Length: 283
Image 1 (cartoon, rainbow, N blue to C red):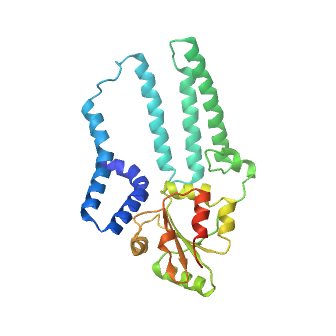
Image 2: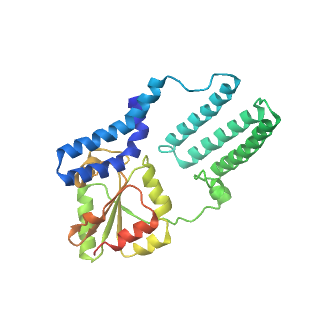
Image 3: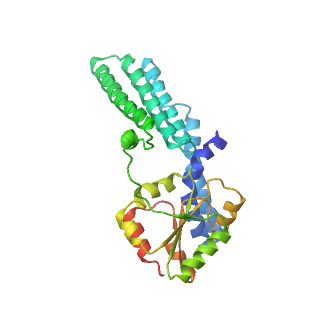
């Protein structure tokens, strides 16, 4: 279970761990660094040990209500599986899976046996809401949509226009050096972004930060480069190792004198704070 949980926890822990390691390396204090990483490990592991040692003490006794709890958590686990698959399968497929899950939950809620009239009506209402959401997501998937929160955005050919930033993709250190040199010759700064399909924070940056009009305006004179390290092959690892990037997301800024480390971003940042960061970059 520890090895499997790393598949879920790893991408989420990488950005804060990278920030912690960078701060520790700047302190040049091995005792402080060891203590900080030890406390991080204890903070992540001790709660699991405590719950395991408790062995269910303090939990209410079992009964018919536990069956309902088991069913609810079963659907939650299926939702977690769909969420993890959405990192590697096409968006249309993921949206269809969300729709099927919502419809299945609606079918179960409509037939759930409850002890009181009030809970029975609540279950029927939940079934109605889930059925509407599931139907919308299935219809959106058939229409080519991919966003579970806006399932009908791609239905009937009514696609929303792309509003994100347009990047040029680089693969290797040689590609990056060539692009940065060309931008320096033209007198333009560079924003270089590390991205992966399995990186949740990367998708948050694309959806919430890179689509903001203020961010687009602030980056109007920048050359925008992106490294897709989804494959994590030897070339990707060499590119990340060059800059000390443990894992995406990572956003770097270059001027005529090279990278401006003070402006480097590891992890997600909201649009307003990101605009302030951009304005500190020197050409």
